[in-house]
Image (cartoon, rainbow, N blue to C red):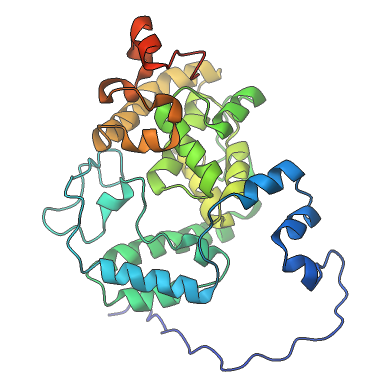
Length: 342
């Protein structure tokens, strides 16, 4: 009863003030350039190859009206019976063993799946729709608590960014955690390209590269792998996300990376290690535990096959762990490690 009341959204204006004429600012794009995606990307300094790759992508419909349609479609779906009756395992989520029995009001199950839930963050990031509007419309949904929970995390990261200031971008993080790091750019590039040799990591990174989006679990797990198993400077990973995510948000992105990297608080983190190899050995069991959840949630490897054509012919038994195949089986499947797949 004492909680701050959340104001309902105000109505959109009927008309916009006329924009000033002949504005001449440094770096300003002309209307002609803005109307042509190719010219706009060239103006921003992208290479011809990068421009062609970008223009081949299937991007979500843009604008406020598209954002509102997406939200309304999501609201209708909340009243439908779920089509996927498979119960995902949640053991590597903050809920521990999972939510309470019965209706999953906070929708923890959706955090364990690769397809996401609201899929509206990219519209929020560029101002097509506000958190206030989503909150107000979601009150009609039986999963309103889940929406409120996601939006509260968004606000928490904003408050943390204000509190931490530039410490949010320090290698040692806001927690001033000192530990060894690597700057091996060959490993960085393999991670970016989805060529690490770990199928779940590679599928996530290729989806990110191809679509500019990645579900919650994917972001957390590829970040954990980058930081603790490869031992790389977490800021390089965070900057790559900044570069490719359609829903990039400075507080959410860097806030999540410092949490995953365990440099957000001095009480967390891997203290006392002198080499990245020792750190990786210490965290390997936890990483394998995370991968075991993905194997349980995708037993046939459907998500992996979607993004890793090299593994298409592997059976479900080996698709998550192709290194477990014999050389004969690798040859028969057309997937020899080191030749067809890292």
